[in-house]
Amino acid sequence: MRRTFFHSFQYAWQGVVYCLKTQRNMRIHLLMAISACGLGWRLGLPAGEMAVLLLTIGLVIVAELLNTAVEKLVDLTCPHYHPLAKAAKDTAAGAVLAAAIIALAVGYYLFVPRLF
Image (cartoon, rainbow, N blue to C red):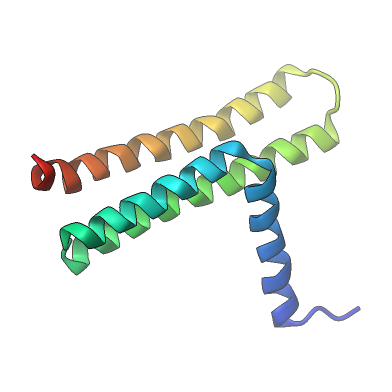
């Protein structure tokens, strides 16, 4: 079967939808992203600052997608407990945590001076 360019996007979108359906944290990230974009629009953030906000949001979303992929792959290849499987999952989760902390710092920098 020959995969078209359109099919590649379709499969990628299925991965995003799967993550949204199965991962509570992804839904939380998406809700926070929508809220942050709305607040940025409401506060009239300049284009450059909105770009930084969107890139930061993208970082968190991509990290969560990769974390989900790592978790599912580890579960598939190692259904029993193994310290290396735990390390892989914990490291992927740590990447999401780091991205979320960066996003909080960016949000603080962009929003707090305008709100208080």
